[in-house]
Length: 77
Image 1 (tube, rainbow, N blue to C red):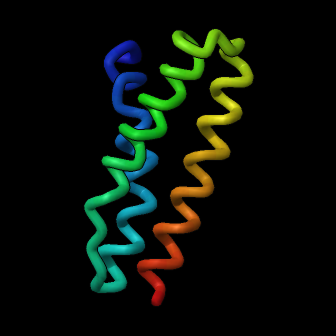
Image 2: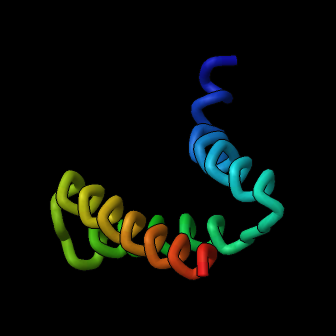
């Protein structure tokens, strides 16, 4: 049971954030594609560019924050 719950942590965190957007009568389906983009770029940084895992994760988080900020600005306007 515990092993299977760790597979869905990302979806749970995204669902919490999307709840507020849906409650405010907006809908945004691009969040999942942003997650996939950040995951792919992080994997490329780790495997092809040969960056250490810690740096790849930090850059992935920074990219996710930047995309989220950009997406949030677009939703608000």
